[in-house]
Each structure stands twice: as C-alpha cells, then as structure tokens.
Amino acid sequence: MLTVEKTLLLKNAELFQEIADESLASIAALLEEQSVEAGTTLFDKGEPGHALYVIAEGSVKVHDGNHELAVLHENDFFGELSLLDAEPRSASITTLSDCLLLRLEQAVFYEAVALYPDVLKGIVRTLCRRLRRMDAK
Image (cartoon, rainbow, N blue to C red; front, side):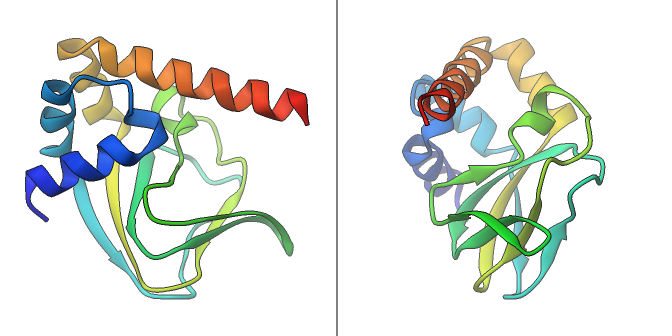
C-alpha cells in the first residue's frame, strides 16, 4: 500500500480520527503490512503484546477460548492497549477471512509520540470513549 492509502485508512479508524493529517502521514509511513490467511490465530490470550493492528481488508474474531467477544472488520483496530503497556493480551484474535493488516510496533509508536504528541491524545480519547461505552452497558 502507498503511504497515502495507509493515511486514509488510519483517518477512517476511530483510534486515529482526531489526529492531524501530518501526524497520520508520518505514522502511516511506519506501518508494516501483514497478509494473513483465514483461520490464522494471530495471538492467544495471555501472550505478551507489543503491537497495534489496523484491519485494511478482511475480518477477525476477538475471543476467549470458544467465547466470541467481537468481530472486527475493515478500519477496526485491535491491540491498542499493547501500545501503552507490554502486558499480556486480554483476548485471542483469529482471522475469519484472508486479511491485510497494518501493524504498529510499540517502540515505533513511542518514537511517533515523541515527535507528534497529538497521537497520544487521540488514542487516550478513544480509549476513554470505549471505557465509557463499556460502563454504560
């Protein structure tokens, strides 16, 4: 994918919607593409986490064993807590279809935050919204 395509994808992902275009383009250039076949487990609950993923194409299942927690599609993201800490994964992720994922490693994220502080602000706002939605349920 071209950097401009990655930037547009990030702009449509809730996590990055409030981040300035200049910052997004810089982050987009740092993303690694990862093609994954359907039925692949990307990681299991309890494994160490150190990357965020944005779904460019396809869909994944978030699950704890056989219990399905969510299904995520294009423009959705997962692993965002791993950007802020290196704690074990809170759920497993398995692809439901062939996927094209954009991966942002924690170390690269910290470099981006040092250059573009609005990145961290956008992520904190998004995580707060998610927590409030969960509390409302």
